[in-house]
Amino acid sequence: MRRAGTGFGNGRLFRFTAALLAAAMLTAGCGGAGGGTGGARTNGPEAGGGDGSAADGRPVVVTSIYPLYFLASGIGGALADVANLVPAGVEPHDWTPKSRDLARIAGADLFLVTGTGFEGWTDELLEGIGADAGVLIAEAGAGIELIPLEPDAGAHGRDHEQGGHRNGHGHEGAVDPHIWVSPKSMLKMAENVRDALIRVDPEHADAYEANHRALAGRLEALDQAYERGLSGLSRRDIVVSHRAFAYLCRDYGLNQIAVMGLNPEEEPKAQDLKRIVAFVRENGIRYIFFEELVSDRLARTLAEEAGAETLVLNPVEGLTPEQEAAGEDFVTIMEKNLQNLIKALQ
Amino acid sequence: MDLLTMEFFRRALIGGALIAASGPLLGLFLVLRRLSMIGDTLSHVSVAGVAAGYLLGLGSPAAGGMAAALLASLAVERLRRAYKTYAELSIAILMAGGIALASLLFSLDRGFGVNITSYLFGSIYTLNDADLTAIAAVTAVVLAAVALQYKEWFLMTFDEDAAAVGGLPVRALNLGMSVLTALVIGVSIKIVGALLVSALLTIPAACGLLAARSFRQSALLAVGVAEAAMLAGLLAAGFWNLAPGATVVLLLIAVLLATLIFRRRPRL
Image (cartoon, rainbow over the protein chains, first blue to last red):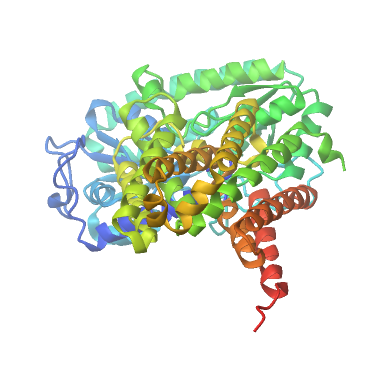
């Protein structure tokens, strides 16, 4: 978990169990989508390999994680039937697709992924539904310069000599997958999503263009707020619990020091904690950031040790049910992030 | 070494020392009752409990887990009585049930709003005042219970029927032990993680049973071994930057191996 360490890895054990369960459902023949337990969608695998459009003829779009859903539903508007795979509030690292998810993707016209290896399950999943399902798979992150994950990518301050951190997600040729945590990359991703929507539904190209312009306007305003808000601040170092802000830091000239690696579930180690406490003290850092979906125990421990306070910095991997109910979205959460960043860096 | 000046590390040493007293002491009884795996069982059931708590809208993440651990512990006791000679069957059944329930709850399509396991399984480096108070209270209760009921539990552990015939309130004693077990495991899992709890319940007791000549001696030996491994393990992990829970557990196993090799051979 992490998340503070799960010790021996009960988290892992659970994921393993969940994976077994998913595998069992798979071999049982992908039939699970029938009953429609509270699903927003009724077109299941019965729709079969065809174009899989929704009953009302709208293109069916499936996104892997929330930021892509935000873009697709914003640009698709009422014209597209958009569903997200990883449910609100679930750590995407912990998620594996279930039979109903496979059925959703198989019945979709467009499957949007980040294109960073974040969706480690994509390949297996595509094998599962077969290449001939007629689904366009689009990488929203195309064209964004990806940040490679080096074991020692400055994550632990400058004097980190033991590059002991695993590359988080454990994929080969690893890049940092958190591309969406920056308005600048979201602007690029919005263009890609628009183009993908136009490809599967060229008839409504004009409407998608118009929706995109509106959404891009919000993202540009957000980008400018970040530029303005962060430019005048002398402090540049942010201490975060989970290494998810590399793109934000690159785009706005900040420097992230992460307590844990990319995977928030590793068990913390004493010398690492000590080093971060020393860094916080030496640089007079006043706030340590933690994210909402994961327990804040570690951030609190460090803050207490170093005489600092804690603040939320949300990597926007999903919305909690409360945030959803309150009408929050990617932009409002990033606005809150900006306020907290300004507070910490003043 | 300047780690000792760090508050989080001192808290880890204190919390570790407390759990290393209560865990093995209770563990010795549990092992003799053939419930060695109850730590794992209760941790899995706790996950299901936390998940259920979220779905039902209970506020605190820990409450659902603790309630589930308590219920499971009572269920283990019930099953244990139903299958007298196969006590381990009870924990196997509940383990399966706990994993299944957790998997099912996690597979429901709605999110939980939080990363459940991060709340459930803590790290020994992140103890706060409330955690230390909880560990201290639980340890005090365990020590007091064992001191007051040592003879009764001892009798009951070795021959439940004879204890009942002898007029002991076996039911109440069993109930007390179940509640205490849930309390110790429930509190410690949240604080130090499931691995360390399971290991502290069993490995020191295994050492004690091998090397000691009496029950009292095994209890003392178990606590001694656990304390030594805990303090040495935390210091080693701190110094060499290793995962603390894993280091302590491997040290415990090293002590067990040494005990196996060097114990007095039975005389013939």
